[in-house]
Amino acid sequence: MASAIPSALRNEIEQRTGSVIVKEKKRGGGGASRQGAEVQLRWQTGEDQLCYLAWDARAGDPSRLPYFERETAILAALSGPWRESGIKVAPLIASFPSHLALLSEFIGGNDRFADADDKNLLAQEFVGQIVKLHGLDANDAVFATLGNGEEPPSVRIRANIEQWSADNRAKLGEPVFALALDWLARNVPADNGPAVVLHGDAGPGNFLFEDNQISALVDWELTHLGDPMEDLAQIWVRSLIQPFVPMQDVFAAYSKASGQSVDIDRVKFYRLYFQLSFSVPSSVLAKAKGSAAGATGTALMFSTMHKRVIVRSLAELEGVGLFEPVLPVCEPDLTDPSFATALADLKNDIVPASGNQRASAKAKELARLVKFWRMRARYGAAFDAVETSEIRSFVPNVPNQLLAARAALTQAIVAGEIDFSTACQLNYNRVVRDTALMADAMGALATTWYEPLHK
Image (cartoon, rainbow, N blue to C red):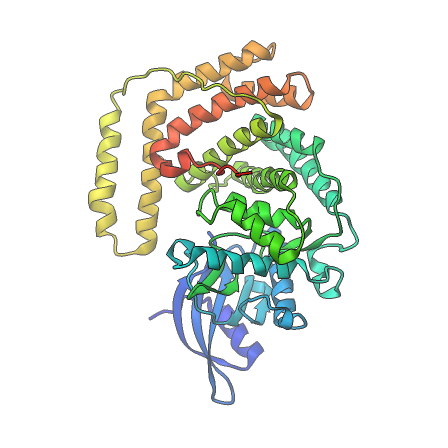
């Protein structure tokens, strides 16, 4: 059987480590473009060792290198000088920047929190791991790749918001992002202590466990130095997609383990900040010439969900009451039966007959797009006309064209020419309509929201 590992990477591993790869088993790589494999190394002593190898198909993209360098740095620190910290990771053996590849000792475990027998116990241990991480010395030279430990967290926060705002104005013209970024810029929390080491993408799905015990924290690409409330916010956002224990319990566990109270207002700020941190850059990437990054069914599904949650979060944070827009009534057009036929073929014939996991996944992706196209054919023209008309009612001299109208609304928000509550309602009307187009493809993500906190 042909090896899944690129031959150049295989040669580099064997030359650098002095070992020979005698067996391999393909596994998930932990990300959209990552590939992985269990590999059995045979060392020169004749001893065999089971390891895990992950590499990135985007190795030729220079923008991916900083993420790889941060992940390498934190794993090297927690496998070396900070190995007695109690933070559980798969010990790093070697890294290979040419392929953005990491070779580590193999650590078994399940990443599906829903499968845990004692979810409360497992969640408490996970929070304890985050507390230990936050307790590391951020000024240690081994963490220099993660940021400047002497820099107040607010400096980085403000710089990022400014950059995302500039990108949105120049490349996207997205009014949902404009309103959220404007709110974030006006509400950056005052610093409440020095920066700490953060996981950067903490939450369900990013740790392995066995028998209700953490095996390892994984997916460290977004690790950095910052406010400890950021990691709690990330857990909250990830729970929109992968249910976790109630956040009230997470906060209680964090306070008990750290001896520090949780600032809910700060967490809510970072909750919104975290959504913008990936929504804006991914949208810029998707809009780049020749990019297909934002055109998949999954990308549309998550983009729609996050925009809806962003607008609802803004309304909650500012105490703005939103009313539900009335959707136009549109009958199916003559193309509707063809969409129904395509969906039935994908479900009943194409997916079941696919023996290839990638082909099956692609077919399911296509089904999401067909569901979107079906609703777009039915409602698209009416929704576009309503949105354009709504914007023109509040922003003067707007062209009678949807994208131009959205760009004009973005400019009005940035210039402070439209009040917050009006802009929030306009954006809410839009995301409700967008969600209606994607609802059949989104399932539970069409209505997912943060659970209330009990006082």
